[in-house]
Image (cartoon, rainbow, N blue to C red; front, side, top):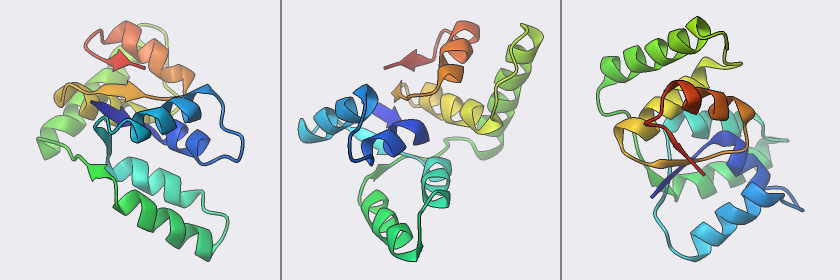
Length: 132
């Protein structure tokens, strides 16, 4: 089972998707459980080209399996701790949202499908984060 990051969804939506977009397509076609979370939906929709594209993506993402934080405050505290631990080890993630997505993947024991180099560094700090 996979949690799909914004970077993978954006690549999936390209006319000529690179490796991660192709991998996501293969997962969806194989009926493997693929999840999206609210913050990822927000990030993807923020990139809409126009109102029509926004509605098209909203409809499509709304049809995907969704997963949310298990412990509202606890998940955000865990994400904050993960961000801080990265900084303490000399790496500052470019987005705190990445730490939230990573924390959601960890708490649900999901593999994170991504196309974002920051996750590789985050996984070095938090070995429970499994990446694809």
